[in-house]
Structures are given as C-alpha cells and as structure tokens.
Image 1: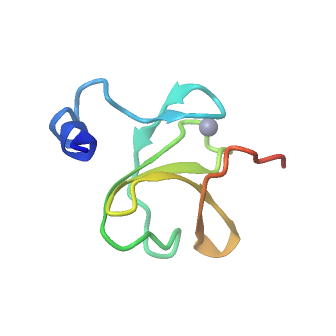
Image 2: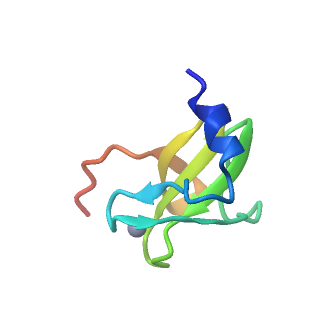
Length: 83
Ligand SMILES: [Zn+2]
C-alpha cells in the first residue's frame, strides 16, 4: 500500500511510468491550464515522448493512466483503445 510513497522517493531514478502503447518511458510534463483539466490532488503528470500519443500518467490522489480527450478532458485509460 506504500507504492505511491515509494514512487515519490525514487523520482529522478529510473522509476518512470511506461506508455502501454509504445512500451517506452514517459517524461514529466507540465500541462498548461488550457491544455488539460487535471484531476484534483494531482502531483506530477507524465506523457509519452511520442507527441501524437494521447496517453498521460498522473501521480497523486488520482494516480493512474489517462488518455487526453478533446476539450482538455482526461479519461481513465481502459487499455482497449481502438482508434
Ligand atoms: Zn505512447
């Protein structure tokens, strides 16, 4: 149950989230307020280095994978995204 804390402690290490679509490490990213509406309690946001990839990873209260939808909304990533 301490995974969130452990992840925080190892930030800056190699413990970055991995994009499930591209199997590559995601990079820390700061969304501007007009780019995405972040869940309450969000600490850090990571996104895929592939710029056309809409998958983001959020840490904090609502930690998990999301996809960036039109109109700046983040939708929990389902894993079955056939676009
Ligand atoms: Zn990706």
